[in-house]
Length: 334
Ligand code: ATP
Image 1 (cartoon, protein in one colour):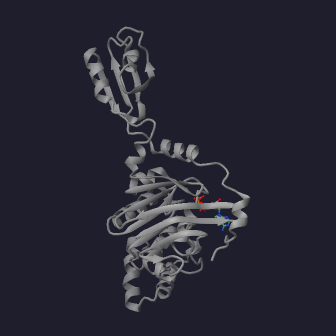
Image 2 (cartoon, protein in one colour):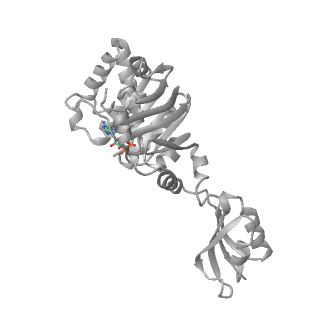
Image 3 (cartoon, helix red, strand yellow):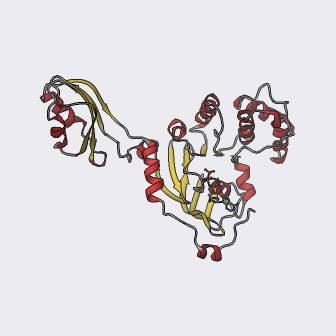
């Protein structure tokens, strides 16, 4: 449904998007993850035909974004960053306007508006000027606009930004309810959002795609993946040393308690080398010593550790080059 090859956008000296290769299929909810200024919105603007790429190719729904932007815009729903809308229109007026731009008949418009009014939970505010709506409702109007023609492809730029926790939950439920039937790309820097709704995530920083996988795949790259946390009591003297000698263990960290006191309790974390599975061996050591085990947790690792690791250690600094400025000046929006 979406395919890019070496997609690039250069704004004067800034390489906003620097050679992105990406394929997204129907049924996927792809999280576009990256720090501020990573190039997420710029990529989305190119996919939706709003910004002309400086290089590379992108096809959306089978259409080339440069040669056939209107065909692309017919098959996508797009929620731009900040969910812009005409402030003096009411939601119903705005949605009628969008329907007319999309060439929908009067009957199709009526049923489409009823459908998105329900989906985006806009009942009660449909005739209130958009400028008087709360941020959450404005975002829902933007979502309703994106869903109006029931597109197969949805491109949502920070769909939950600025919403309160309940509203975030509702929007995520809405996206989840469409998973499987559509191809959805959403950008976010909220990691819990990726865990909550995405079937796959890519990490982008300084215009480059640095990681691609399911949220589980990405978590498995965390330094803490498969670490074992135990709370033990009994004859625990020398336990840390024994655990350190277990094959595949990188280190053992004491989180509380002490090995010295007789009959003491200790909580420690056994961190494996490269996410190796050390839990069975840790369990064996504890059993053989006849210790009392009050807690035994195999940690999955945290997505924020992976995100930090990828975006701070793998991204090259300073992608601003004078050469880029002189070789490409197509930085203005089309
Ligand atoms: P955020 O999470 O903050 O929204 P983002 O990942 O969406 O960030 P982009 O908005 O795509 O990042 O911006 C990528 C880079 O391109 C930034 O350095 C930004 O300042 C720059 N940029 C974006 N649009 C333009 C423009 N029209 N002219 C010049 N530079 C731009």
